[in-house]
Length: 259
Image (tube, rainbow, N blue to C red; front, side, top):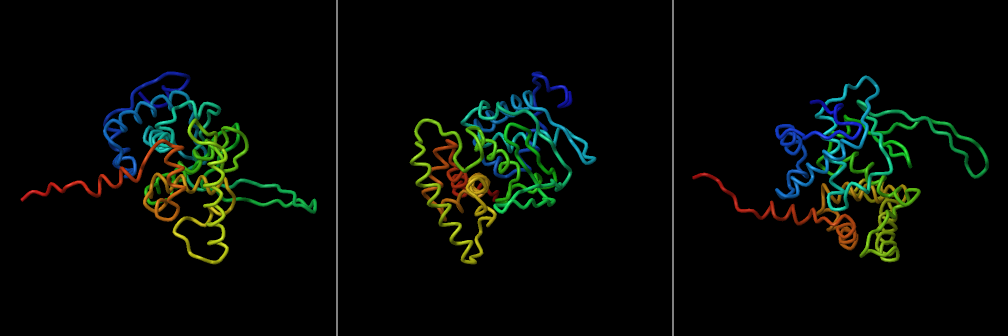
């Protein structure tokens, strides 16, 4: 059964072979505990039953593409639940980077038109768009899928502004104090010319800071914890996950070399 048979509320299991291939190709997912992998697989299957994938630019959709994108996109909501993504349906996949025409009016009333080359984009109330080429580059702190899905979480309570819909246990005041202190510090570092390990694009605005730091939180948690430990703790509380703990367990596991 192909993924196209899953849409419209129909649900089918992701084969064990495809699931193992997906996990093996995404090291940050392979770090999950056995029970987490099982729950993620179920979440992915439910996600695929609710969403509508479409391809453009000559790309031919495959089970591999859809499951990989769904697995990466569902990781942030592993402990939050699928309801976090229920206010949108479409996922558009390009083979590579794509061009979006922009039309912006500046403060003087002058209209500027230009083409923006993107690897992903999330529309408020609309689809999520991603480059499959870039999606395959996941695993080293750059994750366009997690980035765009983080924007969707940010948009759940309105325009993307770096403050997602907060659940119990995190007040808006606490979020703003920690988040914007880190954001302001990062902007200062970028503006001073420092070559930051975290993508300087994160200084573009608070929404991008949240999306980029979410990428790093799941792929390079040690980096986020080292540079902004208080922010790491905040993201850990928000996502209800501790990727650093997963990484630590792997690095301290005893070797089983044959001898």
